[in-house]
Length: 171
Length: 316
Image (tube, chains in turn purple, cyan):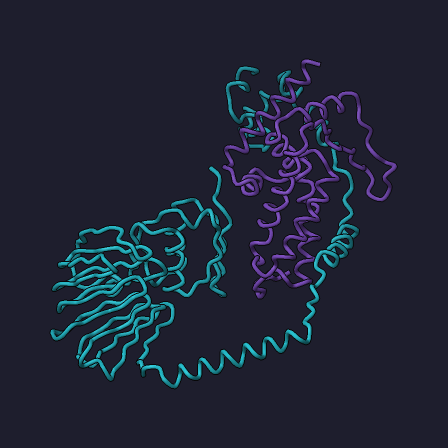
């Protein structure tokens, strides 16, 4: 939708279209880093509520960055409180057939080992790796999202793969 | 091959992105390592995330939005309306009495970014900077050249009797001459350009000769300095530049308001940081950058509504 005429983010149609386009991505983004899909969904709710409360102050083209920041800050607050973090990535397998979830690929022993290795990556590595592999974001897009250089993204990708290979080798 | 991968910082990232040369790629993919990585990638490509029901989540959000923003109901008791009415009557009568008896001041007031040239009855010239206010009583101006200033102004005073400018931070007495007064909030800076100027505040008094500057902070003497200038007028008049020396960021942001009329929503931890620097008076975006960039402060600027919101200090 064209947001250029809006002065702030209080327009309901704008707000809803923002939710539809961004909520799934932000939820996945948070899950990649913090491994908790339910909590991530709650944080998306929180972030959008905060945006609504402050909508007069947030310009439409700033709304996206604002949401990411608020959601991440909320998540960080909670994660700090959780001393124990033995969460596992809530991976599911891709459906091969769009209409019928029955046709799911089955995970092999090898797949589960790889997923276990992904769990052991550092938060930063896992975030970059899954944004690229699952979300299909380019290195450029990831760099922009995380406010780091493309070079840093490439290094994290490289390290993530090395580590997965290493963990898997040692099994 | 293993060495090549381990020595590099980004070989695998480049491979995955198709950034290797054909030769490099073929050599890698035909090696044992290469095929191991290919297997890893095809395994990862089976992964998906649990479903996220956007519409259901949006419904939930709308419900939350309602409950979290219940409007406050305010109960005004009838008796309290009388209190307000009584207060209003008192305020009105006091202000009416003041209005009828007050001296007939002439008041010059400038808006943000507006500079006004004023010729006083004695032919002295005052250049009033933006967001400033100058008052004097014309009836008594012949016998007592006394003015009240709130803001910033440059004075070119003709010879004659006593010339005094009073600010809430101190009084500047002139001994025939030109000088600049900058009085914003608790700070008062006086710089003498020609002739001699005397600055007085309670027991503190100082004579300034051309180039001398003095600062009074919250009613107390703070510092003196010697200023180099090419022209005998301040740069806000000659070059359209705002100069700030040893002020807090709060003061610097306040100048943005004076020059551009920008309202600023700042943060307490940022306000007290020190600032020294200049900015052009014709480019708001550049001015904001010059003030905030040095400290890595993140901000949003809405140029249509002239609103600047500071978000925090960017971590390195």
